[in-house]
Amino acid sequence: MIYHLEHIDSAKNMYRYYQLYLSPSLFNDWIIKKDWGRIGQKNKHPFREGISFPSFKEAQNALQKFIQNKTQHGYKLMDVLQ
Image (cartoon, rainbow, N blue to C red; front, top):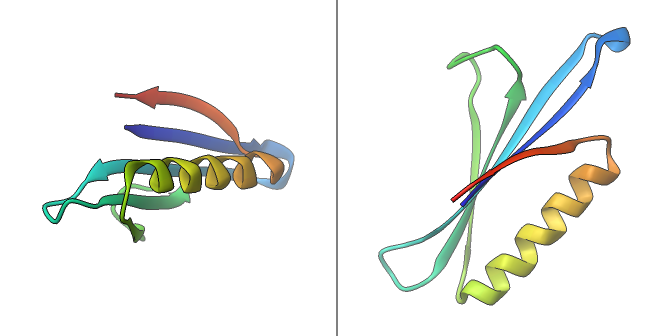
């Protein structure tokens, strides 16, 4: 699953995105990958972080906390892809 969030404030010239990817790994655990950066800036400074969890439930709980944290900081959930 891919969760896409955006924070746009044109008055501050702020155009940010944040993406969270939830996927199984080859080692029977689950991984959340995080990408973030400026909207429209492709392949210039891609930031990526990966966090591993032993179960789907733990990864899902952490994912919800990440989304909650970002929405509290002005991001809006724009899309969820399966």
